[in-house]
Image (cartoon, rainbow, N blue to C red; front, side, top):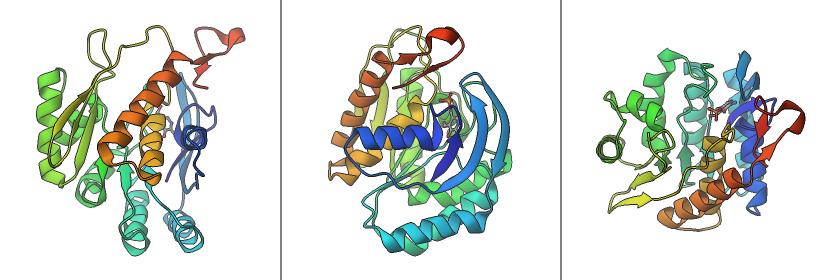
Length: 253
Ligand code: PLP
């Protein structure tokens, strides 16, 4: 359940690639179509909520779904369509919620009014939420700039929404890209070296899709996040660069 990125580095295209690379079959319910590149969001079209609900219903009726993720939802009506249909059909299926709000290029991917709908309706349904530091700040209502704040935020959000929380530290002001995972039982740091000088468009989508794939394969949550962290770190290290547009357009493999 996510939006289309025509440049195929993020959104549903990133999800499809990550889930396929991990040996699973990805079904896709589109919430929105975005005309964008890694450097610019041009036009956003949110899809009819009934159409979103119909895709989800149809997929649940036809396939043995093992796990799911949400990415870009766009607006209140789209969030509500996903929530309504999820409650109707998903049962105990694990749900990873990537609370996508703003693209790195600056384009808005979630209307301001929809943040409250995400908080009050969607997050309580999640098995795991995966905010980056900026999204964590919006959800928490306090600054998230240091490791200590990441940990406090993950802990507070976990208690508030009664779910596990992964705060991603890709925006930490040092050489690391460490993330913190807070579950009902533990707080775990996942460490990684930052890879400099590469375009990271779509890494958040790839990460949450990889977690959903691992959950669908039966990994317990902590192991699923570790597998996915390793996958996304390798994807960044082996990034694909467009020779003719060096400096402007790169994409993950
Ligand atoms: N475009 C779409 C459709 C997305 O779902 C996302 C997800 O976060 C992005 C863009 C984000 O792009 P970036 O990784 O550059 O922030």
